[in-house]
Length: 394
Ligand code: UDP
Image (tube, rainbow, N blue to C red):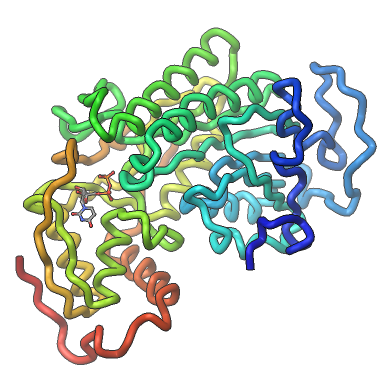
């Protein structure tokens, strides 16, 4: 069932106002989905708006400290976990997603929450609304997806950030930016700390993502300096877990899906390039801690798991944990593929009291269980060994 064909198709998902229905005209009217403040909340005094009369009194927030939080990219892998966490904490969550890479199944478990709202829209379109906090996670994040429409990827990072920063400025809201370890490019410094300026190819196929995120960081810091906007910027290293898209080409999802299907495990290049893999729950905890820091903390803060693995090691571990018959095969290395990546998380430890808790093996087991369920029906018993563990060699 598509839940986005319109409200009539699924009343339990409250699509407040779709962009397509918005009146043409002034920039802030394109998607003005939150004209009503939450119950018990005063309309934005600075803007001098009259108290709207629409709204549902039964939508009362769970607790006095409840905040109204916009999560862009909320139906994606990370966004959906964040929405879930914020709902569990008693906040009101508005999930904005254009479903270019997000998926309705990721937010299925939130549909019945009275504190969850969904807006199908694209962050490159201007909008306004009454919010206390904004998490900007909107952007395709896998190389396959962000290179499919590079111009749109750049627009998403740059115009999306601009629109959201304007919204934060208008509303006096705190705004969080999900930046990325990709701003370090193919790094000459290892591990990467926030003081490293990076080594990015500005014209290569990854640039639409890397440079888009770098430009977004610039916009965030300029809005903080020039307009006093309360910003929180983190740089996310490779993250994995349930709700990754099985078709987006990321290494963890690719390997698990291939292992479950008994297909060849495709290691790119010599497989000696490294990545550090953070389990999604750890990362989301870092997000929330960062948002809750005092105003003096703006970032940058690296969030990732400092455990570093070669891609070969990852392949072997997945084959072992799935107990798969899959063979490991080598395929050409994509252009500008970073050779190594590991976060220095001293700052996150210091400022947020944060560090990852989930070991790769444990996190992979949970992720495999998710994909196993997702692919259920495709598999046959032949794809997996039931007896002895497979030894991996490459
Ligand atoms: N990779 C691989 N096989 C795959 C998918 C990816 O060997 O099927 C490699 C890829 O070349 C890169 C690493 O795994 O070196 C991580 O790739 P991913 O796309 O997950 O993230 P990113 O390159 O953005 O870190």
